[in-house]
Image (cartoon, one colour):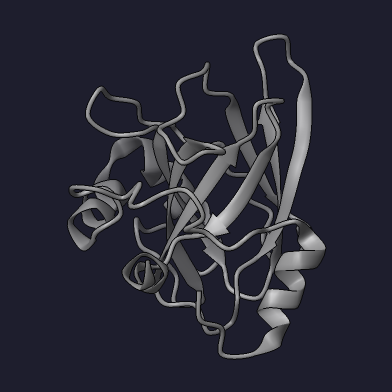
Length: 179
């Protein structure tokens, strides 16, 4: 992954976020995470409440200019599609004065794509990521800050290790092309 400065990489190390590409050739195969996918997710009814509630959206189904659309794919640590029971995910800002909208994304699952979901997060704001299991237990697994210079659309990979712990990494076509 190519960084414009050392700060995002340093933050990634401190926050436990690892660069993608270690084991996954392309978890975003097909339409998953491309412009068409983002258009579809933006229009999906299960995402409209989140988009309308975001600060700066003025109650419209629109992505505010200071936010980033994010496609997330869930994989196993070795890069294969995640096969276990997919936990619910809860995402909250660490500063609810700036963004007080909790995200509880709808996780899409099919036989042709790995589990995936769509979220919109504000640039330059830290977000806490939690997984919730069937018994109601909640586990904080990461903190991630959307970089100020992020493109309008970002693709993330959530990888689960055999113990059920999750790591977040940014997927980059440059990493894949360098292999």
